[in-house]
Length: 427
Ligand SMILES: Cc1cc2nc3c(=O)[nH]c(=O)nc-3n(C[C@H](O)[C@H](O)[C@H](O)COP(=O)(O)OP(=O)(O)OC[C@H]3O[C@@H](n4cnc5c(N)ncnc54)[C@H](O)[C@@H]3O)c2cc1C
Image (cartoon, rainbow, N blue to C red; front, side, top):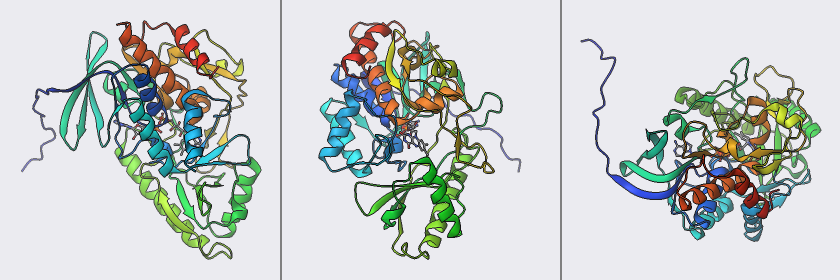
């Protein structure tokens, strides 16, 4: 018997399962904010999310610390206030950072979307896009209910890895400009019962202190600058000590292998830590249900934010928020001495322009979060979640505006988006 090398999938017609003004793909920090802003500004909005909850890296990814949120207002500030009100917020002792409780985060995100009138489809994956005349006509999804098509006036790619833009045929970049190497992925953990003395180690010197302590317990972390933070629940801590190298966002094999390795490393490490005096009660409560991918596709936009913009602290007439975060490239190989580097780039506070949130090739496609248009170095700075939220809010507002004015995202006046973001307190 000869093995078949190909099968031909029969073509089929799909009825349109829903008509929307705005469809947001991906419900992480960027997508949630985009959906809330679109809904609040009068667009009939659908939010499509692969996981069983909203929040992306904040919930499924177990990441419990928000960076570069200092001074951010708008939806970001509303979120903080609600986390505080529900007891899901803890100020750390380093800069203006804070940690959150993932369960409180899940419910608060759901409430904010519901209040904005957003329809949420969980357990639903974007698998394709129908493009005609340079615009997306429909997205195709797969879910428990089968395969469906949904149409909208504008679409927002907030999938982190740029899945929708990729399916729509957009150009993209990935990895280091010379080697193509991407930042490592990380499996993150929540611990119960870690001693208080080991907590709140965001301070850079403390990373090395924690590493020496772990090594003394025969744990050699694959992330060379491990950290541990106290969470709002006083018995729980967030623990980052794993790096998985050369994980491509479009390779199920890479992601599966990294997931299995990362989880094993955490499990074995906690077993060893239990033997250390004072750590006897430590338990691994949770590992990420989706390993954290720092870097996927960076989609080609109307403007590509580059290192030079960071160095000169560039502002733009269509700037939508200010970024104050450093260039934070996590080590690209296991033999690195410390866990991250900045490529010698020292950013001054700079702005993200609206045009970096709009596809250069598809007139009704916006982006928010990790997949917006930028080079390797700029991405290593703007990628943190304190910036994903304003990016989402800006493009969600623009999508609602595009519908009301019957124009494309290409035609939306970026200075008007900038004015809206200023009014919302981001500039
Ligand atoms: C390990 C790690 C540590 C980090 N540390 C920090 C930190 O300490 N502080 C900080 O602020 N930032 C940190 N970052 C950066 C930050 O988390 C990301 O840049 C941020 O997640 C960007 O938000 P996002 O909404 O673009 O992406 P994500 O959080 O990845 O959300 C994307 C969402 O889209 C969904 N999705 C993906 N594909 C599809 C599809 N095909 N169909 C439907 N839905 C889909 C996903 O399930 C997910 O919910 C870290 C990132 C990683 C990976």
